[in-house]
Length: 296
Image (cartoon, rainbow, N blue to C red; front, side, top):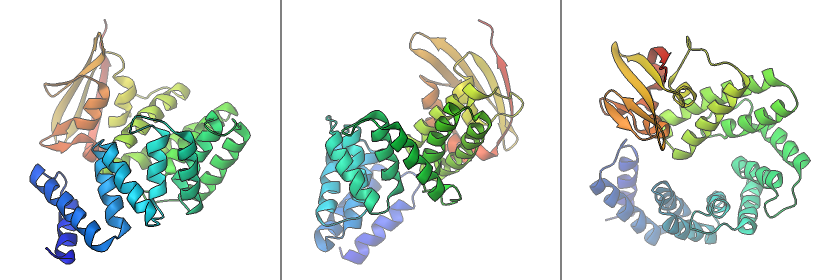
């Protein structure tokens, strides 16, 4: 294998929507080869990111720390997340603050957001809500006109919406939530990242604390809110009707989608499929939603 061949393997497999086990093995093997031969931090961060998405955080930490030792500009952010959330089993806010500060100095806006969160919560630093508000306002100015789906626009907009709600500016908050929802839904089409689904769920629940849900104008992500009660929902995709039903169980709300049961609403949104295609990737093509609450 040559560096060129290994790089082509990585590129080819990255273009596969759902790599199988053999392809994932080839990807890991190619990335490990590229790391050994080139010491290029992009391969280290890519392999670390692969393990992060697989929830193998010990290996993610290994390759992120390797990339950091070679001076990678992005990877301090990944390390900040590992320590902030205790992905390897231990939270360390001092390390999180160090790495987020380093990444923010490198221009990473997401790290600036997490530093704001640390001031809001008093993690490692003294709680300072004024500092939090100032940082989020600064982030908003940087991202408000962004069209690139990789930018943390929903992350900023949802935080600013909370601030606007506390200020009594409800209409402004609703506008921020709706714009964040649309942006995030488009991002999920391409990434299917588990963290984005969590943001969407929180966003939807906060949005409908401020406004009534419109049953005549529903989309897929509104079901995060609607299915918390027993509902029968139908919608169409390419002319074919599909049906969703939520039922209360001891552990929460179970969801049946086209005859297949999911233990939680989250699982239905993430893993529900039509003809092998995740519904989250075709959310914009789902139409004519009809929802009826089921009386207990």
